[in-house]
Image (cartoon, rainbow, N blue to C red; front, top):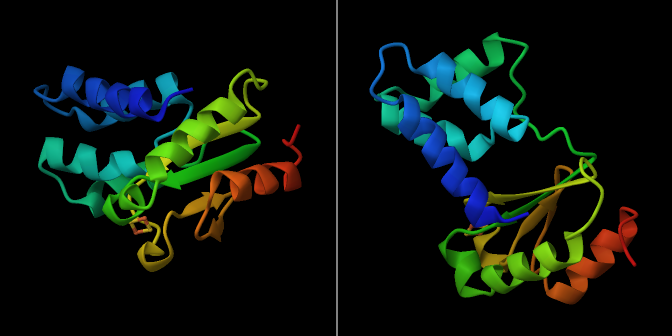
Length: 152
Ligand code: FES
């Protein structure tokens, strides 16, 4: 599982359809097929690529019940990769998380990048199953993972 890979995957899906008329639905379908859901961060990228507003893209995603905005995994772990968190060690935290989650059962954990969780002053930040956590060190990550049943 690699956050960078997922970001590239999202960009490639958008690029493959971008020039076509009515590209929004094909992009959303391709993304859901490839990732199992439409990552919230992809909304802004799709909007920019298709010259739409985020609200327009979000509106289409929520209109069709088929599209999911959350990962189908049992636990979703989102690590902030925006500037303030990067400067406080988010990259090392992502690497640590990838190492800890490597080899886990498919569908158990989804590790995703997010770009600002609003906790910049107490970075690095992450969200586990919709719960925010600030000042996350690798040790704290391990404790949180243990708490949700993934510790070793
Ligand atoms: S930059 Fe990470 S929470 Fe704002």
